Image 1 (cartoon, rainbow, N blue to C red):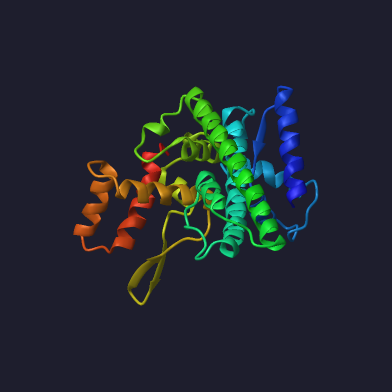
Image 2 (cartoon, rainbow, N blue to C red; image 1 turned 45 degrees about the horizontal axis):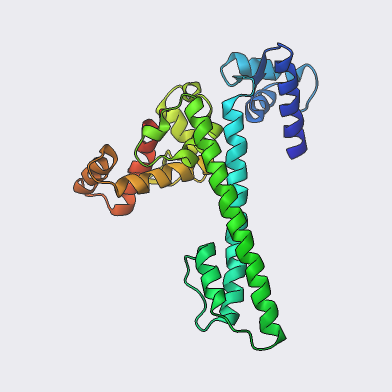
Length: 276
């Protein structure tokens, strides 16, 4: 499936570069059309015209040429990979320091702090000498990863600025979050309403009604990366006084909602502050 998606993406880019117009229709839309035909869900050229039918009914969208959106998506993917690599390296360093230092090391550890701790270690024997040597290697890796993450964030900030986006003017949105929003959303205008965007990000609650009683539960569908951005934005804005996000949260608390419920409401509203 991943290979098929990559092939479709490459074909779309190839056609657009040669002046063709390309529309992307979700497989779920064409599958729905196929089920409603007499083909019994089978796939052939005649039934594949379902893609055109789905597009006519508004299930598709025009594919645009690669630009700053794609560039920011690539930088965001690189940022995630670097951050994950740093977490793994820090965990390995903590394991090494646990065997070298009584009580181990503090949870939040920078490369400089780890190097300072290692300078206090006086190895007793070959085994501890090897442990200290490996820990030094890990410290060097953490410093290199920190440098790459900083360069990545600076590049993001430059591209977000050149794209004309004003997301960084929103309280709590830095270059990394802005790059993820732009890279994964593209043009916010492609969503007809804020509710459509909420459904796309999984921020729209799911109603469960039974016996004249209705309640809502969290949605686990949608783009989870975007959902995480909205959650982070809500948490940051709740902690910032004298901004609309905090005022909205306080108003929900005064209405009788719990902290968790008010925070969920703020996450859903965050999508409107992000320009969707």
